Image 1 (cartoon, rainbow over the protein chains, first blue to last red):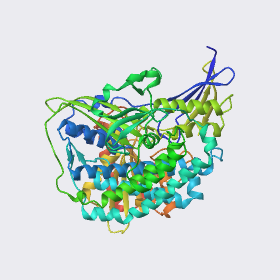
Image 2: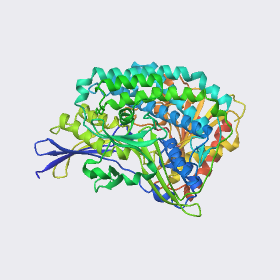
Image 3: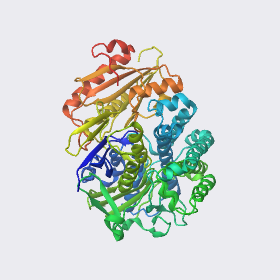
Image 4: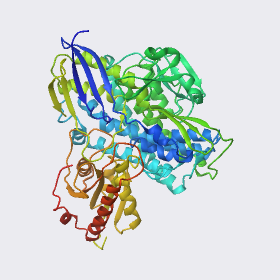
Length: 476
Length: 164
């Protein structure tokens, strides 16, 4: 193997938390490989051991300040299994769904309006001085306000369903601890039509951008892959529950309606010496070929239909672009994500008008079990929570597969594709760096496992030659 | 809060599952118990863009966060609204948040940062280190006085202004 030079980008801007990209160059300045290093803070699985199982849905939120609700619900679903609650009451399930759609809505909205929109509205080559959220505020203030107000609405939904931001307690093993009062319902209902209207607008921006830039995006970090998500029994997209479906790049169903309580029968995780993160893969396909994508793109690709009218129309338009085949464009994640925003808004309205949310029957229990698995379609993709509990009600084993982990290989591949096309030689331009980051941002990775306290999070870009010497260094 | 009619928002933020990173939320919890008139208390894992809506409804904002390397037992600074080029995640810094509140919602709120020195951050655990607890107590005593006076500027001078 010839000498290589390493380009390091750290941490990746406008994604969650910390990340570092290494691009390995040969002596001619050509990209040979690219890797996204995620400084994941391990140890949570050990931290949770010994805790009483009923505490877990609350405690597990400490894992991530970005998407605590997803962990809260996935853990609660696993604990439902532990307490033998095989079917929740309608009030409990619908309250949890409302909480989940609120979480999905606010997460997607923030990602789109405040992290991604500068790239879409100004272009990858725009002056960095305006290609950021400040530029959006200056040029499109109404859009920036919309983003804030949509995000706020999602947070209000979470507040009335989960409780306090820091100590969300809404979901408990076997159900929920409160229903939705009439006052809370009316408070949310008065704004829901506006939210749906804004969601339509956001979807249009994402769709128009993708269609208008299709030629460029078709060669931008795109690659064939399998897609995995939960799917409802009738084939509908379901963000809260279902069986596991995986399709290949042509749309053939490789796995369908698989009971996730047995996920270890089909999925394993590989550890690599250069990354702190694990690499999940489908056992039958092996470590080399068994990787898959998760998240909005995968969910739209795997679903037979969406059960809300406007999002279903949007899904059909999305599918028409590829003649019904899966869409494998990395940048199509944004379009798919905005279809989900509209779907979440429609679902929230449907639920708010459902009298079951005012029901009084909140918790069920059954035969106690010692092991439980909870899956949910978190904003970024399928989230796995798996626990074992002893006779003293203490957790003895915990295994989590977070969505960003499942997208580990795809993100590396996307970076490599982009780097091979746009990065060569020694010059690191803002445009080149941003393209690498744009590819990663499409997956909305959550790398937020570092504390955020004051004095952290510098941003440095370095070029290291084949002798290990830093030959270029930039801060952004 | 004593009869000034001014509205104060106190936001304590951090992750209670990351040892001393939980100083902000714990501070907020203690403040909430005081039930001070005119004072709204909020807490979260981190600051987020939607906080601009609450900021715009108040005259003063006090951000409370753990500090990994600042002055002991705490520091208190004026937050100068400032947009960041590197605004970079689902969380946002206090000064960038204030700049957004001013630009998007014409907020005139004046903001301060109370940074409480912590010492242990790098593992999971729902406990505050003994040193950080002492700093928290000192910060609470300080803030009670500052809120009663409702003249935050005079408390800044010892520590100076610094952009965050």
